[in-house]
Image 1 (cartoon, rainbow, N blue to C red):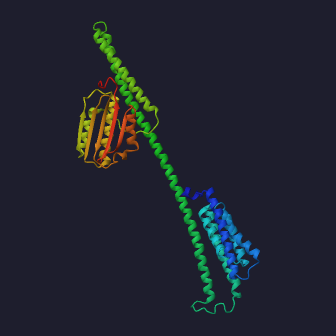
Image 2: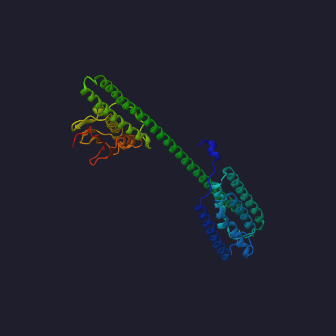
Length: 425
């Protein structure tokens, strides 16, 4: 948030629940103020002089404290009303002063914390505080000549008693008004910072969403490129076989039938690849924008060698009789293995890496385990894990990731094979 935006920020108004709380607060303070008035009248402690009539005392007490029920809805108006009534009540020598002073403190704080226009709220608070000190000076000037002769008969301090009383009153008011101003300002600054944090969090969420969209677009462009490569390969093979079939059709029908069978198989494979790739492109979700890698399961050994060169004790095991795999399945298995090995090197802090390729009756499985920190691969959660799932889901496969019982992390992916590629059961 820029400085200009900070200066223009206005604190939102109170919620319905906060307004209800203010209602109960105002009623509660008014009730306590009436109790305080009753006690003051019962003790005869009329510090401001002879009080007005009983109904007028009730009126001033209620008028000073009850406006607190609107303190956060209309903070400026509440402060002005309480300030005017407070001075008028003291001018009339209303005996209730404790909760009336607290109501003024609360109104000053609320204007600082909840004022919509902070500059206006600052000027209003300074004006009210200056007016209160001016009223204090007027009060001292009016009452100093009416002090009874024996009021300070027991005074023993070095400071003249009248001066001591005046300085004490000024210090108390400085503390009260100073704290009201300070806490109100602090509350407003805290609310503004919370707003800034929320705005920044929203901006970051938007940026992350854009990054994910860009990653999805990048991945799908790469899938489209792979689709082009795979389909173009099969179409080229079909063209070569068709040409050979045309040339030997009359002279060698057996070779022609072999060429036609190859064309049929290439067409089916190309259609299958097209269906899978377009299925991925039509689905929504995040994906990892990963660099193009040409290769399949035959290059998994290179990944193990790289891990070994990086200092890990890396092993590779191939189980079962290998069968020819569709190119997309082979590439997907390679890339899932590559992602798992890369995460082990970058995040797991492992010493051992075990990669296994299993050729089963109806599927091929790649299994990558390490002995590093459980959750090392989880650091790739975001786009890395999603990218692996995209690869596996595109071939109707199954992906398992998680900690191992004995420690470390496992990534296991299974890819179903077409009947022509798998072994008979």
